Length: 319
Image (cartoon, rainbow, N blue to C red):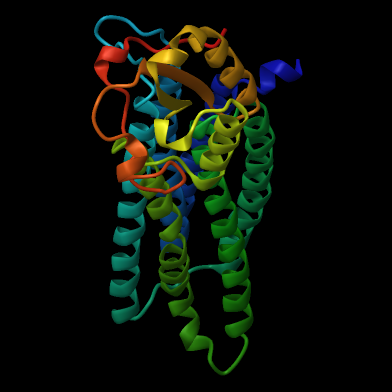
């Protein structure tokens, strides 16, 4: 039973179903009480639903084996989907900020605080539960798609909490001599929340783009690779690596006198890298003439990782 709920597809489908409910509820409730921030919450959930369905499709495609058309598999689809998600969420935040600025300049929006707080309270509880579940599932599957979903729901949780607190302050403000300013609470919350959280999808997009352009893997992965190479007696200058979706690609060029030990070395590296959250793929070549990689760029740096040559063949599954 636990294994079922920890599956990538199960987590993504559950996220999509709940996002659909929030999309309908948020848009309908926001239009009913004329709340810009709740309408933003609903629109965000609607886009999240579409993007989650895209993630479900991507998760299924990524698992397909390599073939002649895709000799290195389809691992690049994962960062591609995350890039689309990040750019779309960034666009929503920018459009919402523009709408909020327009509302502030035109006198604000009158909203019934009680109805808004009721929706926000339900939203906080539900979003926190989904975020907690995805956090638990991500620990079991180590999926970049589930991680992206978890970040989306964290954004939604904090957004709903900010709405709850904001309308609580607006309700208190209406009972004071500054009650006329309560109309500015709704667009002000959109401006503050969207402005703050725009950094999350931008960071998400940046990491995914780094994978698409075959940059060096994150620092923690580089450290694990360097440790494994040292234990396997492989100089860092003879190896280079990059992360591509669910795979860590490690390419090594060995001197001709070490080629007889290629199978034993590959098995040892797979064992040394077996505890990673990504699947290692080790490709070993005989060393060619010319400058070695470390003469241009050592492994531990965050620049210059290169995808293995097509001549290396298909992705090699761990033994």
